[in-house]
Image (cartoon, rainbow, N blue to C red; front, side, top):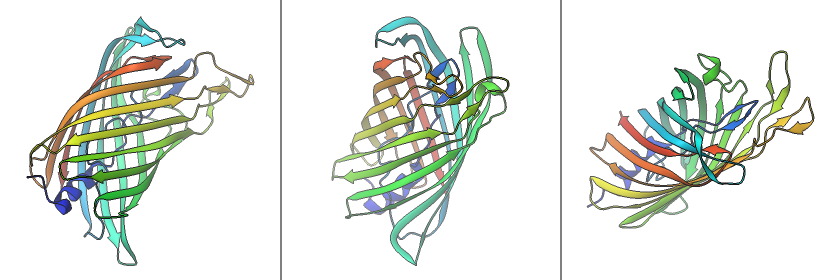
Length: 296
């Protein structure tokens, strides 16, 4: 038997997530991951009218691929990446008597990253991400809401810093059947201008993305799921030169399989493997994900 609706909702409430965000450089756009690609099943199966509580989450994901996609969408040897990234997240959840049947969350996320490819070997803290989310339930089986986050411009070193501020916003949804669930999001990432000292000023391309999860509630503990992630990035515009950078636009579609383990009502663990099936101007994804959640 699967967790009762209220219990599963409280566990799912832990999982509003932000993964590694796109980092843009003057040489073009290089994706560390599809935006919000870390989400799992029941990500947005969220309750309303609950007492305030807190959550600590640790995420990890890695990509080890030797190939990349060129501007024609052809997969070619070389240009891949060997990257590891993580996020440590604190979230405060609450509802308000003055706003009944609506849930709120505020998140503080610190990103971490490590890169080993093409002669590089470095790591450090990435940008910090903060922001709120809000949702309501059109009926007892569904959830709909919005989330919006700001990402800071710097990390502990230039290689882990986008060097411009950005906003990540999306619509979120979930629908629950007795033995299956379907949820996901759709949104954009918009960045401020990036100024290169002694050089040009760039406008990062707007990112459009969606993440979909379909799961089977096999048992109360074990839930396998299917994942589809899509992302499209407009080209980076050189405002000083008045033109777009060559091959700075990109796209990617990944498919994956994973499993969620509801260990207790306060602890859950999710793991997944995903691989690119289509791309353009981007390193191939050959990625694995893990997520550990603790609620108190």
